[in-house]
Structures are given as C-alpha cells and as structure tokens.
Image (spheres, rainbow, N blue to C red):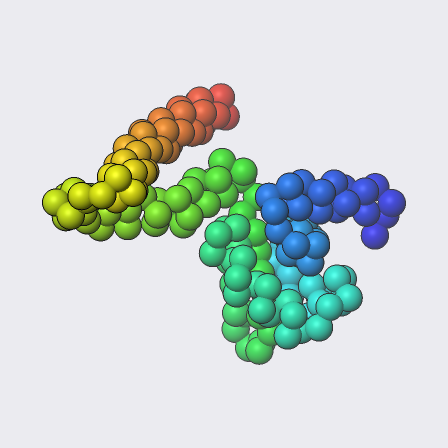
Length: 166
C-alpha cells in the first residue's frame, strides 16, 4: 500500500470516527469505502490486526446501517464484504434503515398512547410528561417531512446526473 493510500485511509478513519463509531469500526468502514472490490473477512482481520471473531462481531453490528453487502462466492467458504460507493445511495439506505424505523414506530405506537395518557395526566408532573410526549410526536412528524424533502432532493440530483451522462 502506498503512502498516499495510507493517508486516504487515515482520512476515511477520521471521517467515520466523526460519526461516533469506535476506532475498529472506523478502520473497517474506511477500508471498505476505499476498496473497489469486495474484501474478505480474513483480509479485514489481517489489515486491521484484529481477530476474525472481532471483525465478524463488528460486521454484524455495522453492515445494515452502513450499506455493506455480505457476499458468499460460489465454491468458497469465505465471507466477503462490499460497501456501497455512491454516497447518495448509501445515505438513503442509512435513512431508511435508521431513521425511518424510528419514525414508523413512533407514529404508529406513540400517538394512541398520547391520547391514552392525556386521560390519565392529572398531576403537574404528568402534564409535563404529556407535553414532552406531544412535542416528541410533533418533532417526529416534522422530521418525516425533512426526510421526504431529502429524498426529493437526492432524486433531483440523481436525475440531473443521469441527464448529464446522456
């Protein structure tokens, strides 16, 4: 690996740590992000200096949220990983896997509970909690609007890119 490649991986590591992940996770994400092809779990272990068990555990925790594909090649018992390289697609997947789940749960389950709690809230402390629940519900609705707006903007950008390539 060249010095330039090492520097790029270090920058990637720094970027991913900015998301609040631990050092090993940031290193794995940086390696996967800058690898043009899929990479085996064994190679990830070798390049990070961590055990296969550590890599396997980390991958189970991060692959869904970070748009990483787990690949089994025919005739091989090795597990390979590939990270989505298109940042817009990766971001959309993170939104869908992370925030949409929270939004859907909150919208479906909190609203009826707020109505139920509204009937029970008789003390000052309960009314304060009710107000917090209501605020959270309103924020969920606002956040959903933001996500929809982001989806629209990303679609516009991708559409413009497609036209430019044509």
